[in-house]
Amino acid sequence: MTAISVRNLSKSFGKKRALDNISLDIQRSEMVALIGASGSGKSTLLRHICGLEVGQGGHSNIEIFGRSIQNGGRLDTKAREMRRGIGVVFQQFNLVGRLSVLSNVLLGNLGHIPVWRGTLGLFSAEEKKAARAALARVGIPEVAWQRASTLSGGQQQRAAIARTLVQRSSILLADEPIASLDPSSARRVMEILAAVNRDEGITCVVSLHQVEYARRYCPRTVALRDGRIVFDGPSTELTNRMLVELYGSNSEELILPDAPSQPVKPKQLPAQDLAPAFA
Ligand SMILES: Nc1ncnc2c1ncn2[C@@H]1O[C@H](COP(=O)(O)OP(=O)(O)O)[C@@H](O)[C@H]1O
Ligand SMILES: [Mg+2]
Image 1 (spheres, protein in one colour):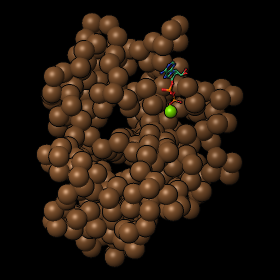
Image 2 (cartoon, rainbow, N blue to C red):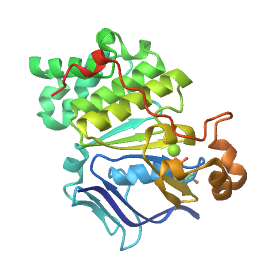
Image 3 (cartoon, rainbow, N blue to C red):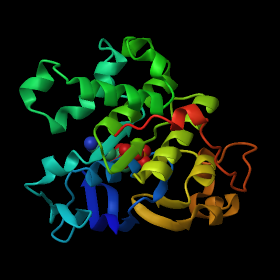
Image 4 (cartoon, rainbow, N blue to C red):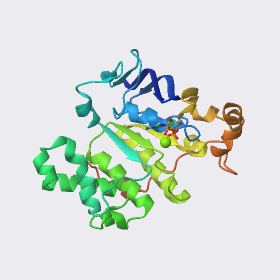
């Protein structure tokens, strides 16, 4: 089943054409990398998919599991409700720093419970249990009571992923989730995304600045340049040589020095991370 279907999506900011007639289908349970140099349109595309922005022109259309979220430049009346099923993770983590990590993860429930309960922070024992299980799932059960602002970048990103698990999203859009992380935290976050994709079947679209991570963790890559799709296919086919052809001198931005050009099989998560369900 098609999880995300984008048709004829264009968007300009002033004279800048950020997205130029994008059409794209992503199937349920796919793990797709979205790569491209800065300014190529990755964030803009992700923001359209989750209904934070609307396209231009009468023919643009985005469907999520066969239901329109926006069409012809207008958000569907169901867009708000549909957004609940789409978890979003950003480069800058977007946690509330003064709240505990557990409270941040509990905020993933907001779309599912009455507003007054969320506002007062009144979460049920079951919801708290699910939030703790989600933290265990991403490998940081021990930081539940710490203030979010005290966590390392890698831990904050894992907490942000835990929040999308509590949200019970069936689609996870991650916009450069590893851009602010050191290489070992970056690998850990990518392993967690790959694990939730594999084990929970969550459809993942991850924008990445560096193609090495796309090759390593995502079977399929969509490459953008100047708002257009210039490659869409198996990540293994995206060789460094092809990147140079596609991006010219900008390709340096996308290729890590000494990066293996062959894919590396993702590591399995340790057993203790996989055990607790977050149902
Ligand atoms: N809100 C905005 N206002 C004006 N220009 C924007 C806005 N958002 C994005 N752009 C422009 O659109 C282009 C694509 O941006 P973006 O989607 O952020 O690229 P990426 O995420 O790949 O770095 C860039 O030229 C950027 O400057
Ligand atoms: Mg961006």
